[in-house]
Image (cartoon, rainbow, N blue to C red; front, side, top):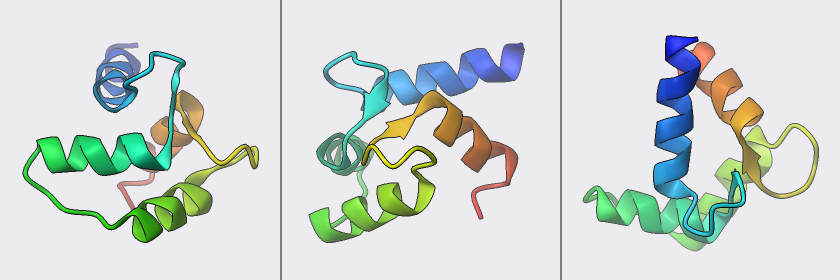
Length: 72
């Protein structure tokens, strides 16, 4: 349970509108806030690759699956 709470906190950092899912623009902005850089095209590609239900958003379930896979 502790890991999931940590994952929720990280997802919430990126989830600017509080809907429980991360848009490509939110991923891009969150990484910029941490000093990184991600072009919008790559943010869209990253989310598309991780999106398990095809809604174009990164859900908590998608994020947990990514983290448990070691970010591969």
